[in-house]
Every structure is written in structure tokens, then in C-alpha cells.
Image 1: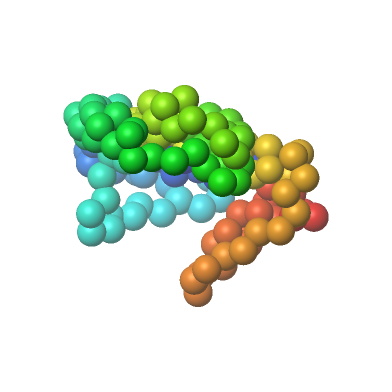
Image 2: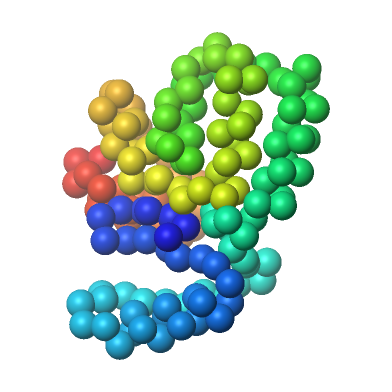
Length: 143
């Protein structure tokens, strides 16, 4: 599982043959509500261990950039573990988590629940698809 989006909604990623087999089995399984195989240009094993070589390079680049980085000016929620990084946190405290996102499942549902728990009440979606709005309603009807 590469992304946990909302209750019952997730995205899988990995090697092409494995994803195609998962797709075949899921379509045949009783109870699967919606199963779609996406093969977008530039798609790959994002948020899986297949990205480990890229993660190592990203972590090196992030560490090299630390002298130029500034602490966040507002709270930031990380998809890797739904952790809230408070405004003013030194970047060195979270650069490893930024790199970890390449190989770890995106915890979107947990991020949204954390934001709601912390009092975030306004969410803005840029773009024509309204995917955020749909996911938010599945996580919390009042959001």
C-alpha cells in the first residue's frame, strides 16, 4: 500500500507485474468497490521500497541544503507518519522524514484527522478535479 487516503480507499504501487497481478485478483474479489489500474506517464513504485536509491540521493541533497533551509513559518503535517511539525522547528529535525516519504506509505487519512483534531477548519483545493473534497468527506463528513 503506497497511500492510505480514506477509510477503504488506498493506492498500491510496486513492480509492474506485481501491481498487475494485484489488479487481476482485486477485480475478481467479492467486495472490492472500485478497482482501477493506473499506468500514468512517469508512474512507478512511489512510496515503496523501490524508491530506496532515490531516497538516499534525496536525503543527501536535503542534508547538503540544510545551511540554506529555514524553519517552517506555520505548522506542517508530514504524510510519512502524520506528524505535525510545529512552526519554528529546525529543518535538521525533519529532513530525514522528508526523504522517508519516498519509501513509506502516505498516511493522508491520519494527516487529515490530525489536522482536524488540532483545530484546522479550512481546506482549500486548487485545480479542477475536486479529489480533495471527496476524500475529505470520506474521512470526516463535517470537514
